[in-house]
Length: 135
Image 1: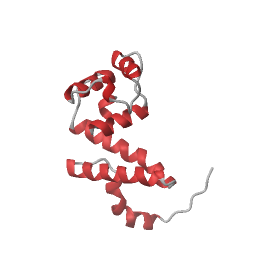
Image 2: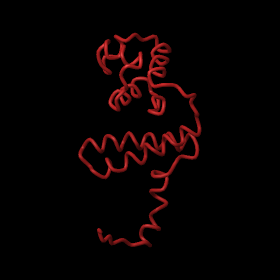
Image 3: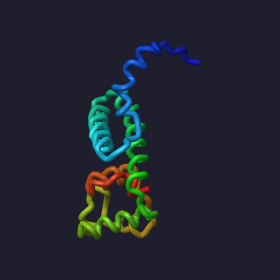
Image 4: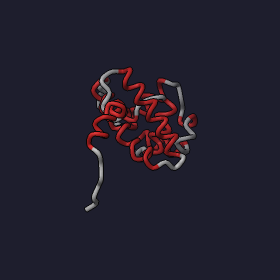
């Protein structure tokens, strides 16, 4: 078992600085701030900073928790969500090369293939939606 040394007083005295960044948002303004923080963490993580990579999943979990409570979505399958977004944006299968070939997108839309984490990241960026849309 790993022995950890820490100073409780120091942690308690500084907690108010980090609490907003490691808590579930309570309103849209806090959520937007946390989303911006997540983007910064993602950029920082690409530079090889392990702390940023370690913190990002916690921050994303809190964003998702807030958005599920604040904006409940009807239960739909990921392929139905993609189909809806494509229809709303008047896109065809050929308009999503960042996801894959037209044949792959066709299989995803028919439910024969599942969206990968990488697909979901690209679709969220493309449509400016939360990953919750595809889960």
